[in-house]
Image (cartoon, rainbow, N blue to C red; front, side, top):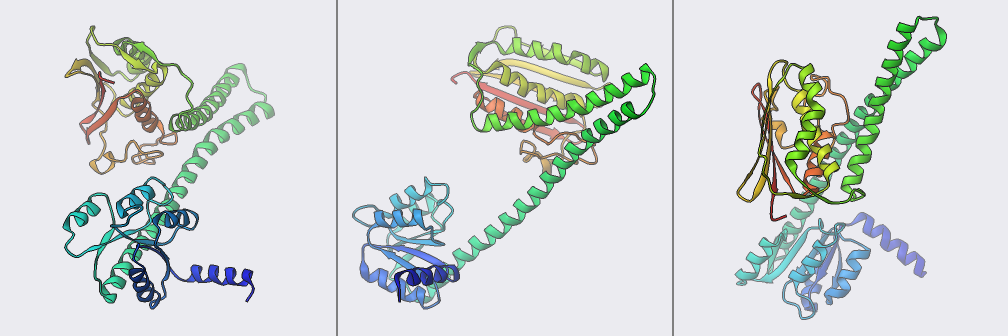
Length: 375
């Protein structure tokens, strides 16, 4: 058989069978693994040298790895660690081979996240059952992941189409009226205002996508500066004053005048906190209140923004900072891509802060932002 035909046949075999890389410096153990597993149509690729095995795994990732712990050149824990450092390989099920009475290694293997361990000497049935169990779990996980990804993609496409279609419909409809109709100056101004509103919505959509891309990929160009957070908050309050008054909200402010300075990105942090204020206003009830408290405590600067709005159901609270996530989008007639709080959280984290949310339906929401001063 020609060399190319052999290669093709091997590729076909690997497509049909699940592949397992076995690493052990004992050739007898490798032969036993190969015989046991290939008898039930697994393809076993044996390696006595762990360094050679790692090179092969990186070029042709297997479905599962079985690895001895005690090896001279590189022990099993070190092999596992090197695989964990590579995102494309860290999800491969990893099973340790260890001696029956080696409790210390078994405990350590569990601590570092190995999927299982097989004790030597092992029985054929035990080995096969353990391998099949790990591969089934991986298959189930991948299927679940695929289903979730497909669902997520459909939701994002739906939101994106809606967010593009709505302002474009406004712009197209009102420009058609302007072109095709003889209307007075007052009506013309109204139509132009509606067109501008549609354009602003599109601009914000594009701006949010650019912003989250910049934050997640460290593409921001703003320079770090030393600043006082109380000054930044006073500026935000001045900007939001008109919106707060329009909604007839009461604003209660408690800002300490003497705070330790922070070093970070002023404009980025201002944008992040602005987005939290936007939500406190937007989802609040008319004639209710917003409470802002800024103080220094336990070597940290703490900012709390509370509203008396709709509140967030408990089952949504752990996802509220996720990209594209919106609570009851249709019910609350929400606009946007659901990136506002994601951008806010990322902006705060880049400025070495942390963010917490507490909320109760019908009572309101509190966002707590903490900046440790040792950062």
